[in-house]
Image (cartoon, rainbow, N blue to C red; front, side, top):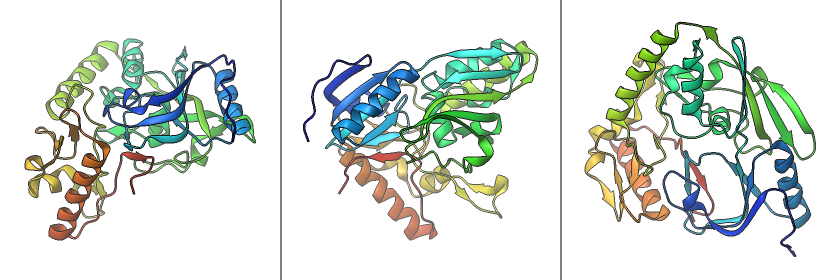
Amino acid sequence: MTTTQAKTRFRLEQNYPISKLTTFGIGGPADWAAFCRSAEEVVEAVEFCRQNRLEYFVIGGGSNILSSDNGFRGMIIVLQIEMLEIDDDCITVGAGYSLHKLVEETVAAGLEGLEALAGIAGTVGGAIVGNAGAYGVAISDRLVDVNLYHLLKGFYTERKENLGYKYRHSDLKWSQNIVISGRFQLAHGDAACLREKMDSILAERWQKHPKGNISAGCFFKNIESATAPHGKIAAGYLLDQIGAKQMQIGHAGVFSGHANILINKGGATASEVRDLSIKLKEKVKEIYGIDLTEEVILLGDFS
């Protein structure tokens, strides 16, 4: 393979540290990183990968990723498409738009439906792919359709119903589709009441979540259970019971406010976080017989 430093419209970097692209602040170098501010630049980046036989992985805010210390052999495509259009109670928003900023904008416009997602890190595109949510609300609840790009199909729009949405999952995960934008149907509400609700949710969130960029949010998914209240057993509750907050490997630890949030205590490696997560999983399995599943995406080689 011969890869050339071509002249591109998008910003192109070689040997770029993924640690700069994730909220964990962890990750070795990607062979290439492409920073794309428009749909046209995304097409160009994917074409660059095709011509040079490069694998690619798309990220937004990097808030749900643990990247290997060995980095990524290929290209990281960083989506920075930040358009926002509000048409009555229908909004269209670019994949690179901050999710929390979107919540603030819709609340200010008196539009109801996304305020429970206040304070969640990352971008709208990442939230659409992972079906981000909180307090019983998922982003897919208000999603109408998604504008996608695929190397073979080009640009096309897919309705939410066809994207396999379920708890913290969509069929967009690990697919070759790239989210360009999403369209949401909200409801008219009172801006002052929505602001009050959002502020209340934020106050509660910051009691349980670290404010700094030292984690990837909840590391494990809650466990779906027909017999549990609200249909789920909280992974954080099980981890609390096994003493997770007192456990640490190297510079990787567990946040004191929430047992399901693994943190970088300063200079942690991906291997340390991964080893700690495995230890936590084994302990929960040993005591409760329950297999925890990662909500965080493991990027790169962890063998």
